[in-house]
Length: 201
Image (cartoon, rainbow, N blue to C red):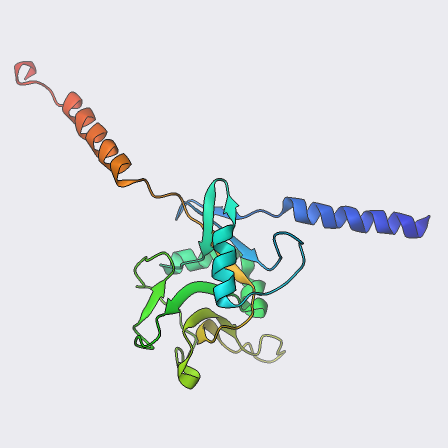
């Protein structure tokens, strides 16, 4: 009986943990963020190569938004990950959505998977170093995180196509150009209605 009760309690805790987990929304970017280390179909813990992680992120949706590997365009945006998944950054050393085309400059040739400008970076000391000449994917790297006497360093690192968990971002949909044009027209008409007529002056 006691053993059965413990099993039921453990099962309940597992279900509660899974059911309560949800991506984190940030009003700063209007995006949702999450740390992904479980298979969608099986729930099993696992890792992905960077290319597999990119494909897996793009196969996921949340609140009607398609996912993609996270793109960090400012220190404030990166702080969202630090505030919510600091231990996962240090111990999981997950993929993020930066890459470099083969042959592009190892320092300045980086891109985001979304095409956003690669203007912000948080490289770990000594990186990117393109070790072996083939490091074209981006992830978090940390050292000495288990040390009782020193912390070491952390930050972005260029790497090969290695297996890791990853960070996902669900961005707000970008309106179609025709929708943007209609919104602009609506704004112009609204401003014209608010402008007083010459006779009213």
